[in-house]
Length: 160
Ligand code: PNS
Image (cartoon, rainbow, N blue to C red; front, top):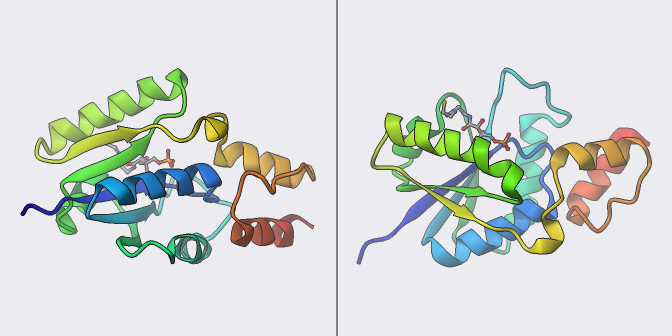
């Protein structure tokens, strides 16, 4: 029987409950799911790559078919390297759609055999983003409902 491996690429700076929700959904439909953190030279992240990796590893330790990795360069090249057939991305709202469509089409042009699969996070996370979490944490807002405890602790240490 054919086994389907997917990658879930992103910045995860920091990972949120929305990411975790998507990881859980992805782990149910794919045989194997690799959460792939991009080392993005264009962005200066709040958390180092190593920190983000540790947080995601702690968050996903309960999923047998989920692993965490980091990558450089094109997402499709990484997908080919790890022999994944699919790229998982979340769409929260219509505002995500245009960017995601553009990226999925470009990835398809670059590598037609790698399929992008979109999933919707639970509606309670539909307005959540790493950017807003950082802003809330910086301004002492309540974030405990939006991030796993391992991320909450690290955000507290960063800002207070
Ligand atoms: O969490 P993000 O920041 O929305 O993730 C964006 C990500 C990492 C999926 C995207 O920027 C990406 O794939 N970057 C790697 C370069 C690439 O392959 N770009 C798409 C085709 S040009």
